[in-house]
Image (cartoon, rainbow, N blue to C red; front, side, top):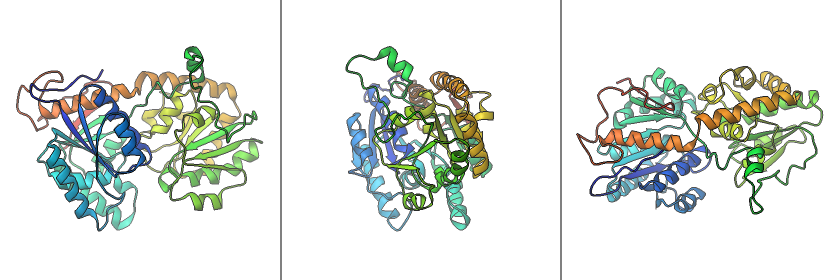
Length: 416
């Protein structure tokens, strides 16, 4: 698994710069940092102070530094960039790893190639906006690629989208992974359970009535497409009497979605972990408009639940081979989404079969420990050091040629 990266004089120091602090990005960062700390890497994280993310990172052993930064670019960007530069100068890291668009903007402006830099977009910013704002975001990504030694994508689809948009970079693809000790099936818990174990049972808001339950987990925002699911739901409810829908999470669109929701839809608000909801579900739906590679489908499949996903970045790569017929629908298509959900709700045997296939697939290919090991290997390549020994050659520059596939979840490309 993850090997220690050290030199004769000091541990490898990685500075992670993170914004946003809600949704999938902080979960990816927390899992990665936990693994790095556990294997001897000094992980320092700059993120907005007083947030749940900052507390969770401290709990897993990271050094957490306050970086006061908003989610979107704005008038505060110069001050945010200057603060990031001061933090990086004080820490003197071996590698800077910037997560998502805002941290990628401020971090690359702060460093400008002076420290080996990894930028991880976690879905492209120019896909999230339209018109002139989208063109500006794309122009920035094309320009700023020169200040990233690697752009780290979580799916081949995310890399292909960047390349197709004209971003010339040295690319690495490392798929997202999930904690398979947390996200697991009822069968696995039954096999391992002791008297003190937490069964992570059905959430109290959902009584065990026997009626089918559809769950959608995610930030309530245009990206996640809950409005598409709400438009599809009346047809599902008509054809599957008693079917229930729970939207798990909170976000800026909650008030609007609540106003337009059909009767009986449950809005849970923010929850402390979604595992119980995923395991309570008969079907998990994620109707996103864009993604890099979403975590929720991987977590749901690890829990043995079938999923229905809109066919956006990373979705096809998430699913077991041959599952696309049952698991993918076009984005922004309520009719297709309703048909796919209805098919699964109407066929318990199919749900059980697909859930078992999904569980086996995620356990074989999406273990977060493999993801962390691949990221560690990437750092070693950037620094020109073997993973478990001292430096042996020139550091601080990526190789001249992409070294090809180094493991099943990693692929590197050059388009400079």
